[in-house]
Length: 140
Image (cartoon, rainbow, N blue to C red; front, side, top):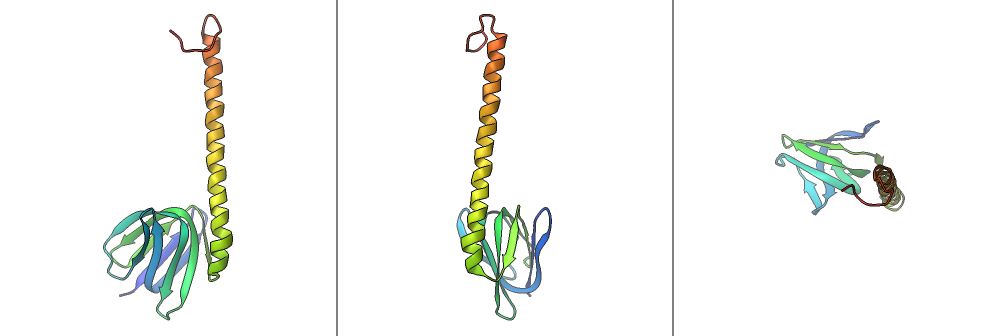
């Protein structure tokens, strides 16, 4: 029995392979491996590199920006990720792509914080207008 590996994003199928001997991925608990016959499994991946070994013993890699990994029937490994970039150049994936994914995640976090701050400022202004005396504070 061999594994089938599918890595998809909302826009593309990044990897679709059969005859896989093993898959390695990383979640919050650390790195783990999947071999044929693995129990059904679902986990959330970190920004990391998924690697797999083909039947011809060659290794291949795909940087994923988080996502979900699902093992189905001990032979199908499906990964749904926000972004995925497959390459045989592990050094490039590690040094360039993972850094880019982390930077994008940090930018998104900062944008969310900025948006929340704007919402809170708007609520404060509304509360000021609703108070009869026009001062800061909650309505009594």
